[in-house]
Amino acid sequence: MKNIFRKALSFLGQDIAIDLGTANSEVYVRGRGIVIQEPSVVAVNQRTGQILAIGAEAKKMVGRTPAHIVATRPLRKGVISDFEVTEQMLRYFIEKATRRRFLFSPGPRVIVGIPFGVTEVEKKAVRDATLNAGAREVFLIEEPMAAAIGARLQVQEPGGNFIVDIGGGTAEVAIISLGGIVLAKSLRIAGDKLNEDIIQFAQEEFKLLIGERTAEAVKIAIGSAYPLKEKMETPLRGRNLVTGLPEEIMVSDTDIRKAMERSVRQIVNEIKATVEETPPELLADIMAKGIHLSGGGALLRGLDVLIAKETKIPTIAVEDPLTAVVRGAGLVLENLDELEEVLVETEDLEPPH
Image 1 (cartoon, rainbow, N blue to C red):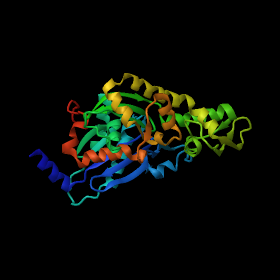
Image 2 (image 1 turned 30 degrees about the vertical axis):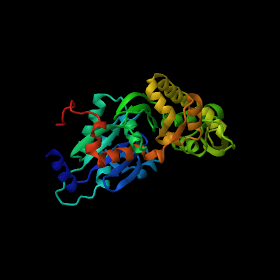
Image 3 (image 1 turned 180 degrees about the horizontal axis):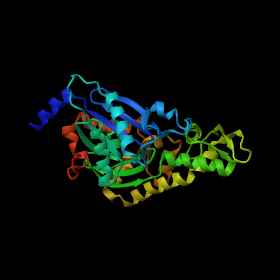
Image 4 (image 1 turned 90 degrees about the horizontal axis):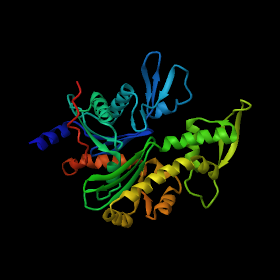
């Protein structure tokens, strides 16, 4: 009876899955696939409290606004740091993604990806913000599990699956078997930290002040975790800290790799520590299947080579790693009856008032 009622409501409303990331958010609509991929950025007028732009439009304003307009990211290290702004961003995504079939259609059921190991308070914040933004019912799924499902790994089978999901705020390493996470580690070192490393390196090595967007652009253009076969270079523009004047210099992949080396090493060490703690039977499965990389960090050149070299386990980036989490959450949405066991238990959370 419960399932029949759910299906009836699903016909009236539209079910959606959201990967609410520190850097980017994606939205999957049941039956339609991924419909939104936008930065998790909100521009706010601090004088009036008015939301001026969300997503791609807000990101264009980062570092380019008057003092009273702030382009902010309401999630830090994978968790909500500004509840009200996150709620507004969620409402924008939900309204943009759903096309109501009837005037009095109920709000959608929503599955939201959360980092592994977040506290009950942080889970409640995500659930409450999503309900306040217009959702009828909210389910939570841990991002490593969603990424593994999105990578089409057999998570419900009795065999070990090794997933490493590196986003903007967190890097999560997990061993999954029989529909559950056997072993996991969450490290708050990921894409944002690599950008910070490049900013700091530019200041110390070249006396050049650059912004976050510039650092990210350089990371994408020539960033690597392992020496490349062919040298790469790109211009780096900023303000000279000595003269105070604008300056452009050429940086190489070696420079950027050196800038990010310490943080990359910490991620790799976390992966090695997880391998060392993995039960032998599951480790045998993993050696055959390999380590799977997802998230934006999976796109860092040579990261798969470095991890494979350090762990002695084949390492591969999953197909379209940026959308693995939202695709996995979407697959759970499409097959909720079969995959309900992979969702995070939330019964102990009090309903919002």
